[in-house]
Image (cartoon, rainbow, N blue to C red; front, top):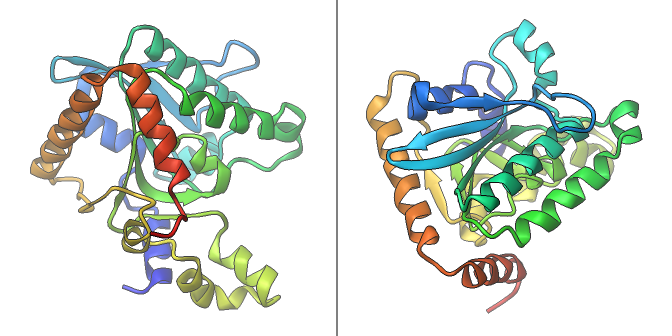
Length: 260
């Protein structure tokens, strides 16, 4: 698949969403929590508590919805500031009880509307970046579809970042990049190649640690394997002293883009 074909696959309305991953891996143990305690509840962010085998886990996912009605209710996976503040509230709660955090990312970007800007979209994202860098509990992020700009990064300052094989992760959409560079959005396929936004590109660059095979709706064995892999990774990081955990997380991001 070309880079732009993977962009198309990441946007496919038929692919599994965050709610599907949560349902397949955690089932009835998941209890959704709501609200940022400041403004409202953002349905683009699905967040709550569940059990990962015998370990309590905080799960935060960006949800696009499966059909037109759901997508409108979820704002097409474009979170408002209250969504990011809800996510941060639950991350700080997880830190208090030393509960690991799993983030599932699938968004074209944070919502750019006037209301979101008035309520502090940029600040909400910046606070997440700052707080996640020093959060004293393990964090793992999996990109399950689109990973667009700061809207995705706001849930991806983690000890490890994994990507599904057909996911993408970039500072800008290929259409937006083509419009800026060439004044022609039809050159999106060229922009996608140049952006190095596919899982394999980002793995080669050291931006992500692992590429996961894309599971299907009936692929229960794959979901069980993924659940086991998540459990082992978080268990390993839970065993680390918190100061070492945060130092390694900081070093992970500092080395991105460095040569040698």
